[in-house]
Image 1: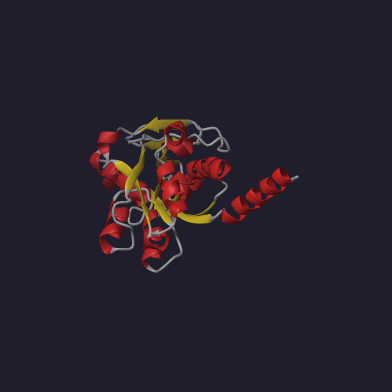
Image 2: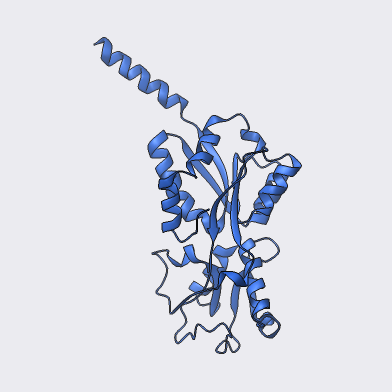
Length: 245
């Protein structure tokens, strides 16, 4: 009986010690982050609550005091800037994934050509280059391949790369330039075009994470950052369409 009481007491103590972290995550990585969080919760009991959006928008929210513990950005610049300004905890920045671009469409008879010969009066969706690293990389690719000047009037901008995908998935754009990881989502309609965009045509999409000052003394937040680097987590990230450092 005394052993049973001790077991119940210890179980109750563990339960009340469980914490909930609030993590800002770039929209392209959200599905992968949800999978990682589910595994983390199963192992530790700690919950993860996500706020998703473009990296630029989330960065601005951090600067204005949004209550985030960790920032999973779609670039390396934003976490570096937060570290330099003091909003991020020095020495905690790490690269957790490397993004890859693909050209994607559900349009009938999509040519999948980087010259966009079949675009006509249709539209090409990309994330907003001003706030979203994947949009910035997409624009770099279009400029380098000589397409930008010719088709820029037909480019439509999603607030983030998730919205760019939505435009193409709902046939509001003929093509979208999105993250490879998004193209693997099972819920998407059948694609007629999924073409890998050569990584030498845009600045590397190195995605960094950083611990934010709100969680500077939170061991659970540090534990989650370390969990991102575990071999099993890296396998999950790779399986979901990313490179890993």
